[in-house]
Length: 181
Image (cartoon, rainbow, N blue to C red; front, side, top):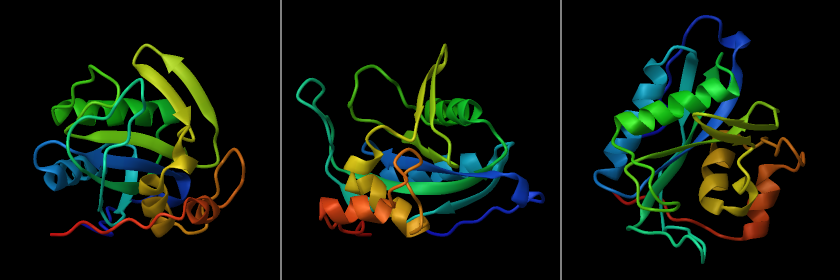
């Protein structure tokens, strides 16, 4: 899946946001495709464009070890008229509709949608539906997040530090392999 576009009138009025995509349960590629299609059909989403999908190993911590097999990861660029919190709610609704159950941190998942960047905004909100922190707090530490973002927009800067994402990626010195079909 690559460069899927859904275009609507009023594109110049939207904000560019970037959402991380991941799946390591079931039909991973189909789950991601279904999530992107659901985003593209949603009110407030004017356009979507998808990165190349890559296969990666799960990432966890000592306190919350990762479970499940390899992930398929990527990113989607959206142009949206939604607020950051409305976009979070939409992502959570799509995850639920695709069978995502949130029980334990870093557990295997059918689909994972994380807002990585929302324009040039830095946001920290804690509401009943969930916590939102943008840019994603570990964005600059993960090649599997940075590679798809840089592919979509090589001039992206981290909204808080203003460092080019290409610089973070270069510092990680990791090369991920494209998913094999």
